[in-house]
Figure: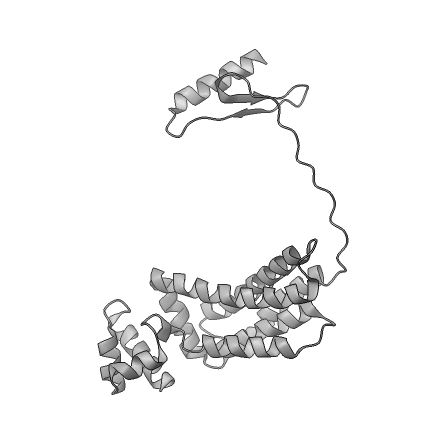
Length: 238
C-alpha cells in the first residue's frame, strides 16, 4: 500500500505539480480512503520519501551488529545502505531529486532526513570513541564527513539522470574520508586565542609594530562614508 500511494502521488506531482496536488487527489488516484493514506504517511511531504524510515532502521540494525575494529569503515558501509536504496529504483530516485530541487519545502524536509542519518552515524561513533576529550567532536565531524562524501557522489549520479554506476563516485568519496580519519587520533594541540589589542577611539582596535592590524566595530546602518572616515582617521593616528 505504501508503494501504491507513493506511485499515485508521484504521478500527480509530475502531472500537476506538488503544490497543486492534495491528499484527496492522491487517495482518489490510488483508489483508497484518507484513513489509509494517514496510516502510512503523516503528511504529503512524507510520501515523497516513502523508503527512508525503512532505510534508517536497516542502518541502525547494521551498526548494532558490526564489531569495534573499524568504526570509520563501519559508518562508511552504513552510508552505502542509503546508496543502495536510491540505486534500487533509479527512475523514482531521479524524479524525487528533481522534485526536491523545485519545491523549497521538500528540500527542507530532505535536509531533516539527512540529519537523522548523520545523527545515527555520530551516535555509533560516540559509542566507540567515548565523549571525553575529543571523542564526541571526532564522532560528529566524521559522521558529517561521511554524509557529505556520500551525498556528493549520489548527487553526481542523480544529476546525470541515473546513468552509470552510482557506487563508483560514492566509493571514491568515502575512500577520501577513510584516508583522513582512519589514521590514529593523536592528542589535540593546545589552542591559544591571540590577545586583541586595546580598543581605541570610535570603536577601533589597533595593534602595534610592523604588522599593525586595525579592526573597526560599527553599528548596523552606519553610513559607509562614516566607516571610511573613521578608518582613515585611525590610519592617520597610527
